[in-house]
Length: 118
Image (cartoon, rainbow, N blue to C red; front, side, top):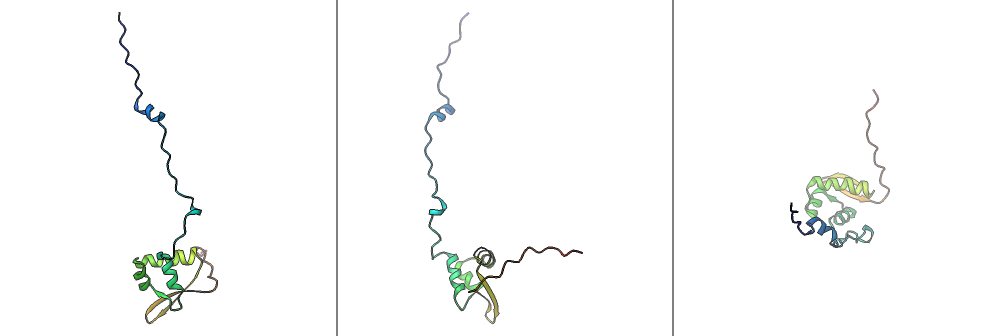
């Protein structure tokens, strides 16, 4: 009776990976050390246009940012009013609806509407 010949052990691919030292990954800088949005951002342009005494129309904001109308309206409601808490007023004129940021406290955001008790 003869013994079968044994093959020399060669490290398999998975063990070779485990023994190799992994390359260190670069991590992004913490959020606090990142620079804030510069004055040339679309957000800054919209807010600067709204702070003027003449105000701005949706059409002028669309032209300045190259956004669509619904995106501009969403920015006004979501960012300007809610996140930044600025007092955004609108008025109807012969040129269309004008939006302006005025000094003063913004009115509190209305609570979610509930159905009246029947």
